[in-house]
Image 1 (cartoon, rainbow, N blue to C red):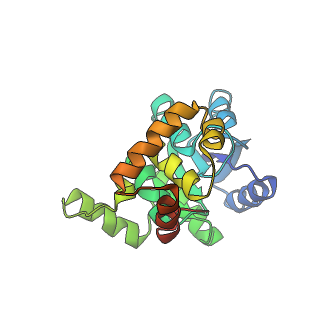
Image 2: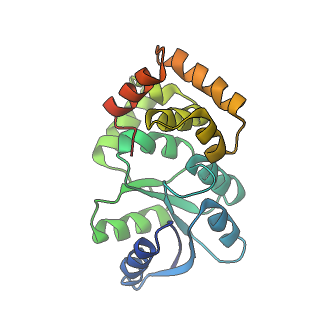
Length: 210
């Protein structure tokens, strides 16, 4: 029996995911969470084999939650479920230890297949992402500038691109405005940009704004 933890901040989505998972007699939902913190806490009170982790939850940044799950529970497999296109999060998630990345436009059958595959120790990615990973391993991978940003820099870029102020970003990420300003300066340099307007255009052109 595969014991599943569903982490998503929308109750209706969690309910739907639970029904899909438990329609399969080999899967049971042992816990649910609406934030990354709740997911980490649930790991200490419930037996879990696979975590179904949504990218967009309130609280701690997604990558921070993923890294803590992998560090604190290395035997548990993490399948990322996201409304974001693969170009935005998939490579980062896989490199951080996720066993798969599934966008929410997949069918219920594909979700169950993905859960089963990662439970068995495999990976679940689209053919396009598989090619991209193979190119990376073969040293033929040509990364776009934003893929070379650190996780924190990427978070700051996404929020600047969506029009958030430095103060708003600081509050969302639990950082000081000075620290966010430092990340902003690094992002501008790495993307060869000069202003926030440049970052908005870049984020829009690369599909980084939800």
